[in-house]
Length: 85
Image 1 (cartoon, rainbow, N blue to C red):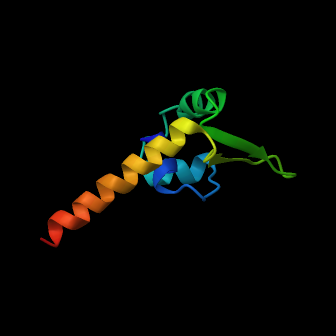
Image 2 (spheres, rainbow, N blue to C red):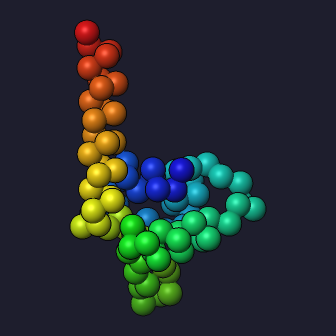
């Protein structure tokens, strides 16, 4: 769910709060664990701003991310194509 959010919004820089709203999780779900794994694998970048807020963005230079973005595009195109046949 978290990775899919980034793949669907590759240019967005998102906070944990924004990610929570996009994937509609309960407040008890600790998404930081998943975000830290994605950072460790270089799937997303993390940024800390002057006010201490952390934000995250998809690393579109990562080879795995590029493949996932191609797959996402293809799946979206296939869905559109099915609706318009």
